[in-house]
Image 1 (cartoon, rainbow, N blue to C red):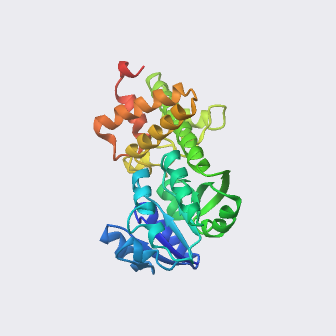
Image 2 (image 1 turned 30 degrees about the vertical axis):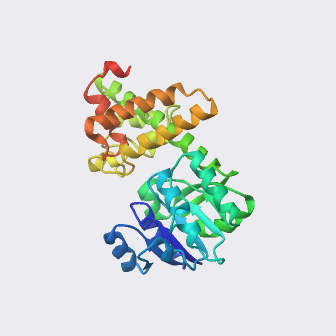
Image 3 (image 1 turned 45 degrees about the horizontal axis):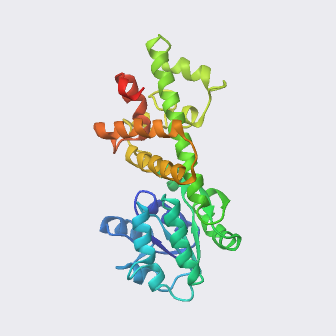
Length: 301
């Protein structure tokens, strides 16, 4: 397929690279010339404007920071919907944004006969580089069927979550759960250490026991037990704290809109916001273990 990929950041660039490896022609657009050069070095093409990038492609993939960026890029003057040719029938947005914007942009696309899928991902930069992302896809059955072969070039688990907006709902719930779990694992390590149990012994005992979780065995937040985690790279992300805070806030917005009680989600949001305020926004979110272990914060209890 001939694909335009808008947003060649930490996630978008490796996704574009994997599409190239899968045999697709990829035209990239980004405001950062350095990532455009990297994309060209990988064998991709670039365009100076969004309009030129999407002018004659089979599909468009976007990976952008916020819902406002997605709305502007998709529906604004010189944006995707104003610039695509009749050849384009599919837009896949893999950004993590609010449900309302995903549905609104999807409705605008549908008016033009375009399948718009909200398809946020799980797996972080490592999953993007390895092509092992999980895609949580919201949209029509027909749109999902058209997008699945393309998504297979970038991910391992491609799941149709339901109608428009469902992908963003799944992402909000997933990351809220991860953040809650990460705090629990971090508190347990801090408690164990203060009571004289080593990190390694704690890990060895809990990993095969009922306390096991991805936050423990797949993304262990303390140095040592799992050598591949950000904790062993001085908490270089990974998945930055500021991005987790963004996702937690989106989850709280969705919870409020849906009238769903999420007391742990709300409390977890406050804790990560406090860590963000302490200057850890650009560190991996698993630095919560170091932050909680270093000091007792009575205002967070």
